[in-house]
Image (tube, rainbow over all chains, first blue to last red; front, side, top):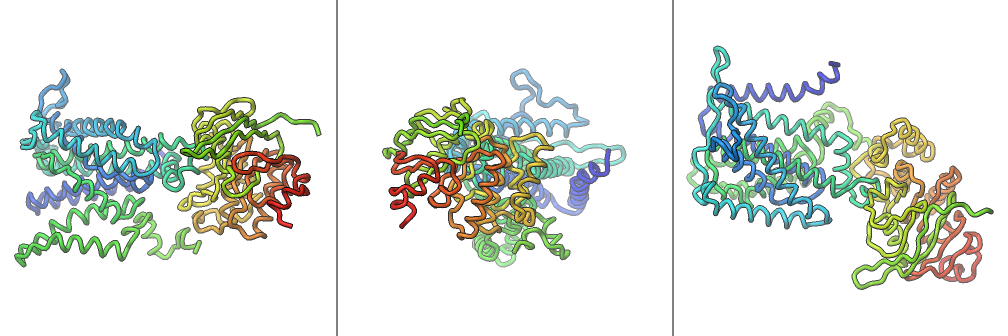
Length: 352
Length: 239
């Protein structure tokens, strides 16, 4: 156990603890509506982070991210509603440690989404260019229509009564169901960030970047570009599935229309706004896109009695793109920006 | 000079783009320790030839590396067998630093010690790259990017180095520098297949050269011989 190892675990730990503190505040002082929005924000952060791996870091263009979220959400919800599937009990932990079941659901949802990502990605990522966009768009419509017509998952009515984790007794403390769900969501947010961060800064991550930068040159370096692209896509799909699972157990209700093209576009807006190739940018933008309509525009509408939420929303986006065409952070991370604010010049700036 | 073993043998290479027969039965070889040039005008099929060797585009005919046919292999597998391709237009990774670009060159290698040595060697060849080690490749000058592209190709530790138009878009002085380095790398034992429009520079450093015209080889011989060949002078070198 070296100090270096400690250091590398420190920031995620601090992030997690910080999120917990926020959670306690939310639990004590805010209503259910705000709490739900916060859980959706966690979902959106995971979606944005994972899509950034494909669109931002690997330079591909997927426009159907919501479909993997849908798959994760439905799988997770379905498992939680059935006592037994194919003779396997997915709700395997007793009530006292009920929250562990939700980790199982999320992982299962993620794995099925990842498998779907592999099936979709393998043929379309062999080709260069816009095929992935077309295929992901088509695939997301197919899945949406299938969900809409499958009575086992509620069809057009949607899936009701999806359980939430129970309150958790920890000695003298009792965590509310919201707090348990929030801790799970925070755990996945931090884990997603950590995994993607580590990945991008590894040798494999360089391979992702080099595919984005110049695919022919990447091949000339001995990189199996198809394999690299599929790998990125599968990892991305997994986390989208996890995000879906969090969404399902936060909302307690699923409807196929939630996962339409608009949802995919929302996630794309988040990563473009935050900066393609910036993980911290994705987080900030996901929060912004989640909070702006709910916490700023909705009160504004209630106050003025004019529904111009979508007008302001669109104008904000246009302004952002005019003022910061590469997104909030470009391809930089929040740590780079902090460094340059402290007056240390980064390598890029030295160059010019 | 006794004939050395061929590193690369290309026999009856044909490439089609849609209905266009771009390369029509090209045959040539590159022997150990040689610099061999393919010279010719724009669209003659030089770049396509390199791409076929690298497995990037489909072809018919045989391409053998050290006697082993490369047919049906994926580009990344061909790199592992020892063919380095520095693509036309340099193809550096603009948002990665110089060092990261060079590390990508060593992507297929696992010998840390050897990688470190080769990195040092690249910096000896191109001290400019060492000065710019943490700078993003996109911010380098054209000449420096070309140096980086060549170094990055060398980092794969190839048995054949293929350079596609290293003089493209560079000032004459820089071109001369680059060609000096190519010569030096060759002196150290690297076998090089060079594709160039700048025929004079190419022929001056080549042991042998082939003139490619609309997908066929029309002339071949020693570099110094072709440099004085009437037809070459008229078509490619100017009076």
